[in-house]
Image (cartoon, rainbow, N blue to C red):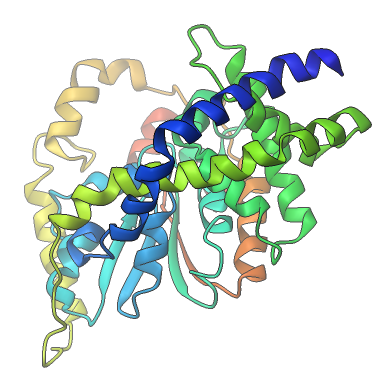
Length: 351
């Protein structure tokens, strides 16, 4: 017990007092003058949408904004069918908001949406998942920590509308991945109070209950401080942003013509290889290493993975918030999978 106080409570209390003195007066002014949502911010998958909660809450409050949670595919803005390009100018009556970057898997999206309070309640959202997420161990600890938001975690725990089952599962995963991350060489420091809170919420003990009670002021102040930091970090994005009006007349989208155009563009952008990969990607990552890729995935399976449990909790969170999600499961590349040995049977099993 004394050791727990020394390692968690005392450093946290010292930090609390120091930051209170330094930022107390400044915080009120910043929070009160942070701009609201600007449409143009939705076209870029800014990191601040993952590490904070303000931008997601602001875009969700817009009646004509569709939130798209994804991963590395959101950065392919050179393709005309990228959502930010395809729906530019609100041609279909809405603005997209891109949320995510590489390694933002189901658990990251679950934490983000759980932290959104009532902002996404009964809204429609798009969620993209990719095959490579479904390896046995699920999301790697370093990739998890790169996208983990302590602010979001504190917010979801304060949401009384979320079930204990959701909070317990998310806390178990946070505690598990935090411990795995701390064991990695060159791991960055992890807030001991957040790690302790995750362990306590996942599996409380008498010691953790007392420690958690002692840290209540720290957690409360941390929420305020994270909120302040979040608003400071997004301020310039919003100040320099712009809004787009909905067209007076929405023209019907000719989907057949759009498909033909996309196929033609795809052919033009993948002319230097037989696998229909983007030329630049093939040249950079595959071309000189092609022979080494042959049958490399013959023992690979996406049948058993922690990612499925993370996906199930994402389903549960959407259900509890009344969210109507459209899930886009990215298909595997058939010809390339054949080459690397991930057979059609394995692909069918994954689907």
